[in-house]
Image (cartoon, rainbow, N blue to C red):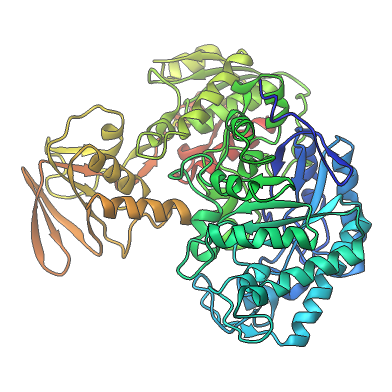
Length: 638
């Protein structure tokens, strides 16, 4: 199995042990001055230890003016070399190869980050940031070219095996290459040859300063997916010119910030969706080609290689979710791989708030040195009440710590509301996480009692040392006249298949649950209206998933009423107020107005002398990322 994925590849006399690749992902784990932290080093070391053949670091800024986020890595001065020299050492001890991606964010940054006006080929604002950049002068362009070469040389001094020039995703090099952003009419703009002058001079400068034996990889967007942007045919014309200039590998991605859903595609995008771009490029060059694009399964990666579309396969977010993916795959332990679900919440949504990234499913991400797994000094009897993501994570971690764990779940299946979250269109990957959690529970011999509520009678009889209460939340029923009519149902009951609905549906509540339930009902041929009090719907969703969800609702002609309140529910209709009173015909009304904690058991158990810790929604309704993190941390501190 996976013979293609685990075949070595030699580039510039450097042997990459396998084709499993981690591409650059900004973590915001470094210091504000660009120096490396222990958190940053341990994050990459965990991937090398996990068996990844090629690791490409996050963007190393070539100048403070080129930072895209506050705490990115930097090699713009010699003082930063010492801290970053530790990184290649840690990675090399496991046999992995590491490249430093170097970049200048160009217009895709902001003055709050760089403390100055962003610069670009032309004074054209990026639609994503709405800040007008300053057009670079010729002398400034020449200075930046030198800065790229100097940054690459510092990376070589640190011990990196090479660098990746970030010429994709709308950053400065990409801005020069594309008429979407480059409106110059001098030697650096206009005709293709002129627009390529900047990246070619950067390549020559890096090669001159770093020598012939240093790997230069180049990342490029195969298609920018914006009006006036480069297409795959443009890219196929450009790549041979870059090869002639001296690059050693080409990494084919997609998108710019305006088309951010192409850079980091969410659940709604098919697996391996742009591998054909890499295949087209591979026909034209003899250097290794790297592909990317929502590949979260090593078996998919292997077939991409087997079909000859690329030479290396990026599984970037998959490495966040499970840094040990390659080792597990090589050993045939596929059921132990915690698979990325493409939610884009912790790795992207949090990042664009300029905060350090996290992972919804992996609570140890970014805390690898802080949370080194170790056995507890004494074994405890632990009762976990509730089999959702928080409860199962707590049970898994407690068992790994050496505690004896008994999990109680009142329903017939595990997964809680997260299991229902997998029901709407494009959300099926979520079920894989429940698979993973259940498998870990079995392997760790956790006692599981289904169809068994953790009642005071049971728990006082068992006398556990600690009760972890993960009973989740229950839907809120609003005080609306008619809310108790038989034609009114909860979104959870719709998604679980407990109710049969008529043709015309009104969903009250346009949050993520309400919007996704509406999408699900529209797929079933229902005529759906969403009623939401706020200005817009699905506001808590991550950027890229929300883009696809809104487009899906539009395509299915779901009627969306915002700034609208529900005044009354009748048998066969809903009365709403959007400035005027309107009656909407409806066979059924679906409530999706949020949830409230279900934790009444806590005080009862505490009165009986039991130690109780509430986690997840039982402690306060919030995101899944908080539930899994609390489950892990609580168990680690027992």
